[in-house]
Amino acid sequence: MSSIANATLEQEIAALPPAEREPARAFFAENPPGAGTPVAIVIPAYNEEPTVAEVVRRIPKEIAGRATEVIVVNDGSTDRTVAEARAAGALVCDIPANRGQGLIFKLGYWLAAKRGAEVIATTDADAQYDESELVRLVEPILAGRVDFVNGSRRLGTELTTDPVRHAGVVFFGSLISLLLLQKITDPASGIRAFRTSVPMTVKLQQQQYQTSEMLVAARFNGFRIAEVPTTMRDRPEGATRTKKGPNLLYGMRFARAILLTWRREVTSSLARRRSANT
Image (tube, rainbow, N blue to C red; front, side):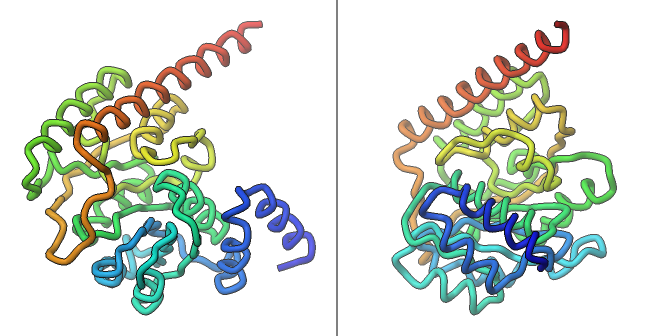
């Protein structure tokens, strides 16, 4: 990198939250900016030692003729998540303190963008998704048909056994469809793909529940959204238990994230219209 590019990168790193600055510097020291693949798969991981390596190894090396790379952002794990992810071939950004999945995703998107990704996909580190299905999420974006593809267990195969969580997905799908005036069946899906411009454009503030925030913000910012069928399984034997908390508390927080983001984006949209008319 040129001295100017190095200075610019350092300015961007300095603008990160303090807990992310040194890990970001260490990440780029090992994985230089601009040297990445066209497709990056970002995986947040918190104490996923039993499954993270399997997930990384299952990700296709190439999608629609484009090479892929895996970026695992460790969210303060206290087990061997980092070692397992690196051994499986992932690029790892190791954040020493637990910060929340939403903030970890936001950092991962920025790392992928700086590496030069055209498309970013996500999946979870707990092996509930079928990583071979990433092809059907990424391909429509590379073909230019859409900007954001959301995986849907309701359109595909839901092998989970929690009826309350299933009811929640149906309810929140109906809520977000009403608010966005577009049919969304699985607003909590962890497997998705989007142009790198999406997270670099929209406002991402949620510490934890960013799946719904990004959907709402992307819609209000004019990005084209589609859903494709995907598979969701129960966590495999030995995997870390869910960190989302009791169903009722999780549901309340998820609803709050949807409604706060919708209100924020409506307010911003109205402000833009007023500004354009003056």
